[in-house]
Image (cartoon, rainbow, N blue to C red):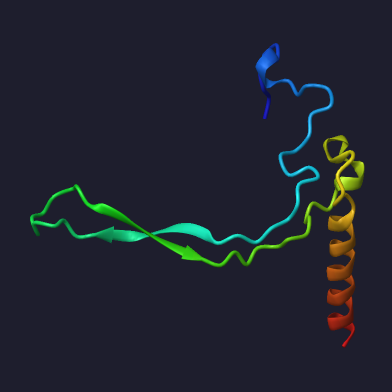
Length: 102
């Protein structure tokens, strides 16, 4: 589909040396605070004003980097986790091949 050519606004350009927000930060597993519904209104009237209920749940997300192109991405330069996504991707691909070959 054709698109119109136009100048790129300065605020949308990436600055030289830009990094991802996760670059080099320690990986942690903190409890997550998630929405768990609403409490009924105290006066039992049908109102829109209700209190939001929150619940803490364990974070079961990955602690490793899962970006499988970090070795070629300049925004990953200098990150201590760089390359671990490629290694994880290779291990998953090998496991899939082993399961297919039985």
